Length: 306
Image 1 (tube, helix red, strand yellow):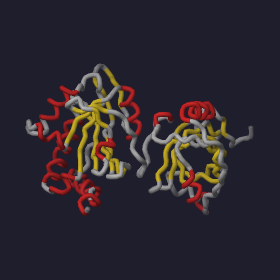
Image 2 (cartoon, helix red, strand yellow):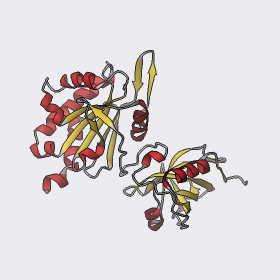
Image 3 (spheres, one colour):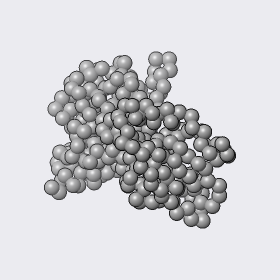
Image 4 (cartoon, helix red, strand yellow):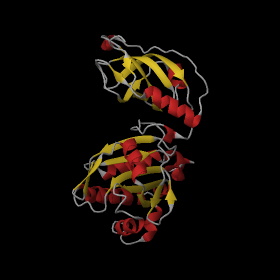
């Protein structure tokens, strides 16, 4: 193997497992060239991996790749695809090869000479693929949760509405109360716009499934809804299993760790569009509630104008 080739550690095994799980529709070979341009002058590197996700809006894909010698370790990496025809053909589950074109002017590298080595159409069975962080414009995963009334929910239940989510811990006394007060302000601002309120929904998701059972979340949520349970019709509080939490947290870039009985975690608030695709993520707790309320209102424009 020459320098710059992929040391395929685990990707081939992953593809075999995927084929066994969801079936392979046979190899289809297509090639596409990224217009490297002067900003991309330099060495390129051979890649082999499996497509985990794609964003039509960003023309980017996430690839679960093996080690690329002298360039990157085995990891999930995001690449831009310059050839629209090739991008259109790529689907989650496809095993691909290509040439990484490092970008000097962009944080996302390009991928050229893309060849689909085998096609594994996972369809709705995205659980057959490793969890990955969502790209803007990518469909959100349908991971089961349970709300404060012990009702099973998934994001698809809110299709046709703009969905604003955040991650909390009911025992947290630091950042979570700040996030929750800001979230309550967003809820209030939306309520002042009847049409936007009807076309939107809020969910606070617990990152402490062991402690935040539905009854605990119900009591916790009422504290931010002025004790009025009717408020749950617009703002829910959700729990999920540890395994599902790990997948969901990965999807939205939430990092959490339990230490000495407490859970330290990053703060992420995300907007999901009416079509079930990720619109935007706000990190931390310093965002302006009025900015988020306006973003939600903008995301409900199709529903409000219907």
